[in-house]
Image (cartoon, rainbow, N blue to C red; front, side, top):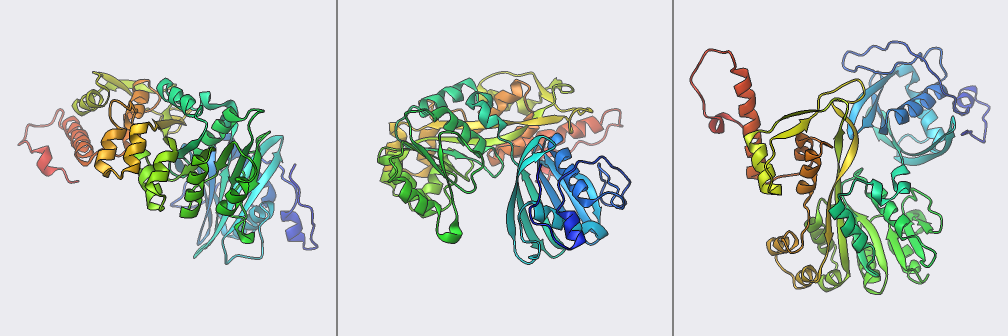
Length: 467
């Protein structure tokens, strides 16, 4: 049970610092532009119980984040489920300050500072539920905005096998992790599951005969047998300075939480070519962009070519609800897309419907991957300064055999794990392809609207559709 150690003489602060206790309460709230799905009796329920219940309920709903958005008359509370934000609760103006103060107290923030951004954390048990939260407070023109990130590393503990890799991609990763030295990068946007993947890799590599050291900001999951170092830039403990010391600790494997700057990138690459296996994450979209990003960080081409071992790019797509998904006929464009990308003829795919057990036809998320094991030809191409277009041809050639993120996504559409609309929302097609998809969708809708209508002069969809 989380408690606060230092009581205060102020009765209001004392109440705010009391232990977490769950509550089930409800009343109606009024706001013309905000529809709350959870309502609280703010007049008769202590704010500590309300905050406690919001956290527990959000976790129960499968949320990854809780947003407290200030506005003139209070706070809008929204929760992110399966990547999308949903309205949750409305906090009245009279309770606005109390709620913000309560969250800051349990996150070990300075409750007297409201002009500067602050970061905090909550880790412990709430009603026998182990929680690990990261809290961010940001001053805005309407007041302090707070976001609580709900961390869940249960997937990491279960291993790589549970992360949704296709058999082809899983085999490539298994081969990649057998390489004794080099650098393996996990790439993707914020919230795409990079930490989950890299921790799963560490679990697989964590054996008695290896010395594994990590440098992280923050340390998100404790792993037995792994030496984990926390970055603290305020005292000069940066990624780069920590890496210099780690190299003198006789490591076999080094994990860098994130490559953020040129200095860290250069040290990581040099560590990889001096006999160490280096794992790290970086914010890029795919394999080619990852190589370009490191070159932009002034990493020498010959070093990068020698050090690179593999790249795992990923995004998270919403998973179709198995209770209500239904099949439909594919459109002409969809047939062509599957034929061009996978060389198959497909007549039906699944689409979302929506039921009481899901949100808009989706429940949970599934990763979409692009896994590249860098061979000697690609290493030589990087070192020789090959043009981007020529490097692209080498990476996506049949000899390399990479499954692009689009191909991996389309395979998961065929299996019914996700929808085509979800894949096209996440993955950029070339301009001609995406425009063609929009035209087909627009024409299909127009044709449906014309059913049972009087015949009238036809228009050319390619001329009237506005991009």
